[in-house]
Length: 392
Image (cartoon, rainbow, N blue to C red; front, top):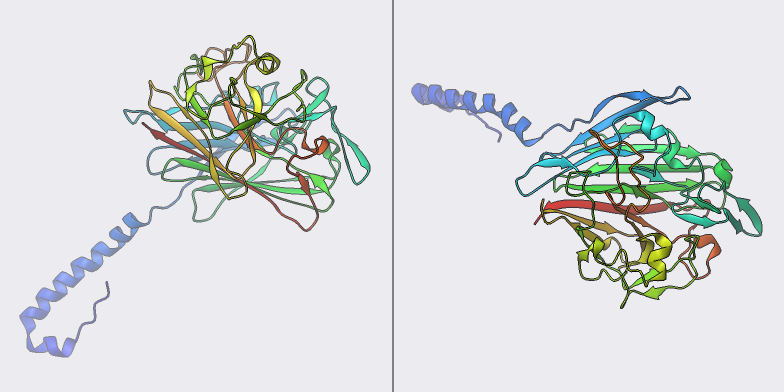
């Protein structure tokens, strides 16, 4: 509020002038406090997280919102190492699997919390072609290349910069031409934004100077109970998909897109993960050792739509996922085997975490009819996913 005072008029009324000046003085004194209360400064904390075996310094960034949610990200692999969400009593607990030290992240692990690229999911035999030219990616998953080869985006050091005026962290990395066998210098940006409605937005952007393929995703493992010693089999999951992609014994798409109707892959109505995960008479369940498949999302080509949800009844934690990607890999931690150390002690046992990996379909470069993953020079790759946490 702005005051305009006619001092000549107040000269006639001395007492009124004194009273109003006192009142005006009080209001001016209060203005800075009011302004500061209305505009809360965004503070993203940064500290040293350790040094890689190659001698590179890794930083950790902490984002907090006004509700009490906290997200921590390290520059090694752009990994989310901590994400807290409220339960029915408004207790914020960590709900993502990870480690207590950098050494565990730089060692062998199943992509905990990482940015995945250049190509998320599997490429058969690590081979694809563009315009008649053949390319080979290092094999790191039996006869396949998985998540970009043996040194994908999960194992590189990203540059991180807080976004001015926003509760957001921007990570950038330039993948050189023929890195892991992929053509083109690919400039990649991933931005994590923590909102006050307890949602975490992930925006992916990329450009190339040579025709290439790209399929980025985020590989956090969730356990909404907040207790990493518990399995996720009792979590209720819903997936907004009428179809899924069957795979061969080596987990490569058969080329078919199949209805979920009458199969263990029907999550159109929420039900427990463990309800059909051991369906002995289903060949696809056997091949994935549970769920490790891509669902063909119903809401495609119309912007960001609802993809999936998960609910832990005991804690009341509810996770919703929204994306503009055509598919989502639902993986249920089938290969966790107790060999990896858990945060705070213990180990990660089988199916103590699940992944909602929004993405294009597996092995797309070798599959006719799948939505294209080709990126041309002059084009911009963009992808958006939001993870929203609440209670019910």
